[in-house]
Image (tube, rainbow, N blue to C red; front, side, top):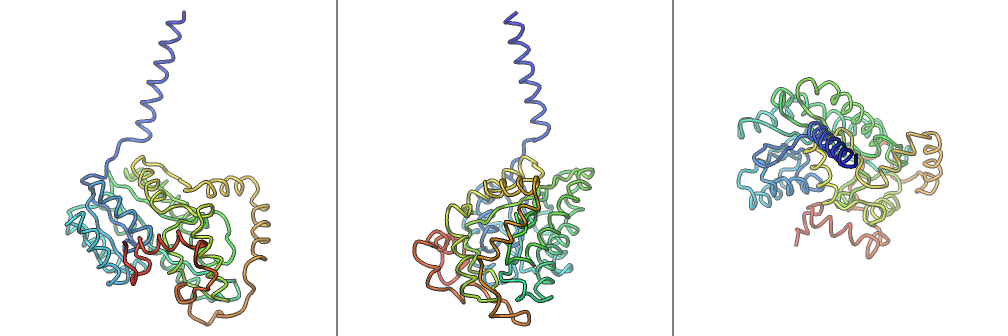
Length: 341
């Protein structure tokens, strides 16, 4: 009888293994063509490095040609076939050209990683309509433009990874244009998951918590800029409140390879999603209390331009508070005047 039970357990385990393999089929990036938007610095560059190590053919894009060339030169040391294209994904014509150039160079696209994004930091009083439009143009429509351009080349085999944010599920104070655009991006990504499945395309929606990429120095600030930079830079640098960029990149690419549908990166992101799903009103009330601890309205207003954090770095955002963030910024080319060691 014990032997019979053993066989039953073995058969059950084998069946579970087959089911898991069908749910998460094997996928290797080696020899695949991967297009990464926003690949010149930060998370995009970290993922591009990892993909290069895995043997993928790479196409990256960014708006700044100088930043893009620095990233291309670094990646070319690992992979002579990397393609770098200057592109503003908020422009549908440029997004279509990006995809067309990638296909012309490599003959196909296997994976599209929608990573390009912008973040504006400051209180609601400082945000004008142009800030909301910029966030939507890049964070939402940029994703839409590249996806629509690539769909025909991905049918039957391809994968799409949409880098959204925990801000696309939970409201984060002083990031309202960003939060609104990321909620839209999450909705698009989930809807795409449902509709693209019949075309044989696997879509992965990524909701990371704050990542330690060094990107906070290029975030755009309004309001009382130095105070806003202080809390944002420290939060994006401390290990307890941010996820290491390399760890996040590996988790994202693993999710893509497994064909996972919806992934939160970081324990805090998982916890926030869980609590928000159970008691969204409670989470919003807590966020409102947190908002009272952030800088008061004032300073650069709705009619002013948002400016990058490195222009307004206060003394408090230095030393041990931001050491890890500064190291990440150097390593991931967020500060071009301080190249990686």
